[in-house]
Length: 268
Image (cartoon, rainbow, N blue to C red; front, top):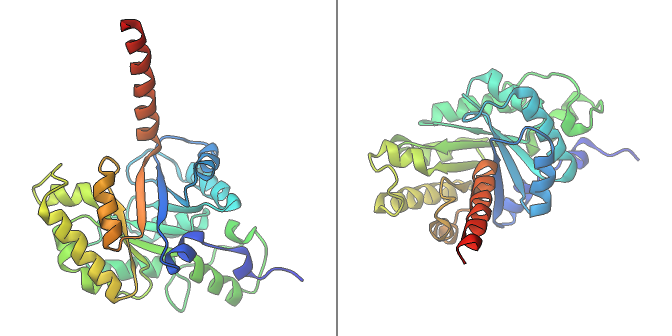
């Protein structure tokens, strides 16, 4: 018997979040080939997200990485450069299982992202033919659309004090799955750039986690790669997705450590 669309397209992140488990993610900004998907899998990451907002990665490269991740069970997301429908739908058509929408400030903006990411009756996403998520197989539209709607995640980013103030109404938007905190931009917006331990950071996470818990949504920790203890504090509070850092940062950190190691050998 042939597999159904729901059996083919699986989102391990969505499944783990539903079980209350903590999800790990690596951000792709530097590597432009599919090896990064295999590295993420070997390292033990549940997810990767290709950051098209803050990199020069092309749509074609992004799609190749997403498809490679799909095939090995690493959930691929894309942080889109804007929330315009053409950015959202093209990222999803290319192989992403979800979009991370930056700079969301209101429920109306969140609803626009949902509309672009979901097929009718939950949204307005246009059908573009066979999808990599479904192995390019043809299925009745109703079955394929329902499976894709179920698997596709909409993640909105809170990066301003305005967003925190509207956390409850944004989290209430049907179709939003998770709020990812953009801690660095949030601090900059508050006039507290770099002050990770400031009490307003804890307050922002506390308010967002409470709002998401109220509406059955999830919270992600972002921008705290250099503050693992603080990230762990927010996980204990209820956050369930942790963005651990970028491929560039990991490569540079290990390269710097190795170079220093050799320099110290010469001094002994």
